[in-house]
Image (tube, rainbow, N blue to C red; front, side, top):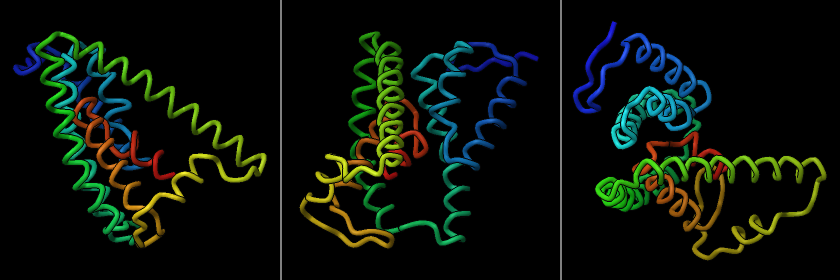
Length: 195
């Protein structure tokens, strides 16, 4: 059963969309991932233009994020102070990302930019997490990055840690930028960065 998506300008089988929504919703609730890492590549593969894919993914993230937020708030798993710092800096990063997306879309380079950024970010994240696992298995001393972060100025006490406010501001701004450009969220950016 085909339906027409007027903003994307394509016809697509509605069952693909429903199945994709179920899978992404399940994974978002389970692990905090889904929108950017599963939904975007799948929509692009189905023929949805990348700029529409990003906007659609961000809209999907709202529902998954709010439901996950409420569940974790009841469990007292959320550092609200750090969350607000990251949300506010995310607005700034997102504004820059939307501005850049518009420029790239008008120039005809948005698809290439998004796919290149996905490739780079996934590779970078995978390699750094793998190296972190190896470092923990060898019980090595602090990494240079951890040493750098521990010595940043402007320390702030959060609910679960004390760290420079520059860390959540930087993570929030970067996550906001990537959400605007790639339609990705917490599971793709914030969780690996905070870990």
